[in-house]
Image (cartoon, rainbow, N blue to C red; front, side, top):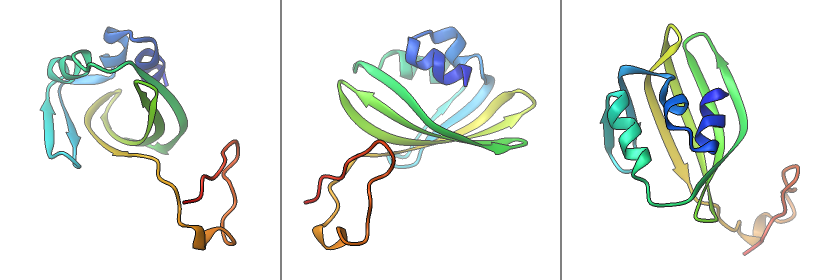
Amino acid sequence: MEHWRASEAGETDPEHAIYADDAILDYPQSGERFQGRATIAAQRDEHPADRHFTVLRIAGCGDRWVSECVITYDGTPTYSVSIMEFAGEQVVHETQYFADPFCPPQWRAALAEPMPGRTIAWS
């Protein structure tokens, strides 16, 4: 949780302290891989958007933990799932998936209900 708190606060050193020196970060949707804590930190530090992080849920056990977050880039939310693999107390491999919100089709209106704290914008 400290990682996400530091991410929200823009505190670079505490945000990246969780990573091993030789950690790997993968973004499957773009095909990018970032190798090493310094490279991971640099690519995040150079991000041009104003970013904010809201953690929805963290679940896992042992050496594998999953975080569901909303990352807001310049006011636009993107949903993110982060899978972190640990060796001891440090992340050695993280995979992040990103998804933009969408309006569901009207035909599902009779079947769906809003998630807690949310409204549905039908298309």
